[in-house]
Structure formats: C-alpha cells, structure tokens
Image (cartoon, rainbow, N blue to C red; front, side, top):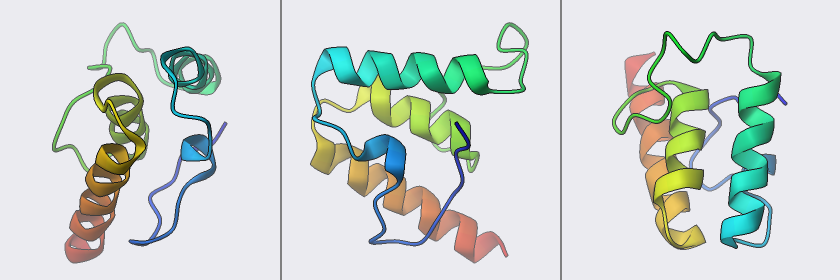
Length: 84
C-alpha cells in the first residue's frame, strides 16, 4: 500500500473505510507491512510530521472519528503544499 500526500478535500483510499477500531488497526497493519521502512528505527506515528506514512498511521491510531482524521490529514496536506 502506497501512502501519498494529496490535496485538501480528497479522501485517501486508506481512509475510505468504516471507522471502527478493528478496521483502523487492520489498515495500520497493512501500511506497516507494505512499507519499505524499518519501523524499529523510525517513530511509528508522530503528530506534526509532513510524512505521508507517519501522518496516516497517526490518523488511524490516534483519531477517534473519521472527521477528526480528515481534518488532521488535510492540515498535513496544507503543510506539504506550503513546503513546496
């Protein structure tokens, strides 16, 4: 699974799930499994990082509602757009 930062208002495919704890955990595990990172050497879910995988994991693990996750994700998208 490839996680990329998009544009505000666009819902990424990993967020297009029923926002239950079980589905969120499954999606987070999928991101971990298909990531090329050595997650023992990198922080797993850090807020305020303009890094697609970390931001997605933060949303899946820490955001209780999909609305909260979307708002955080869109702030990451805005931050990434400002950086370029």
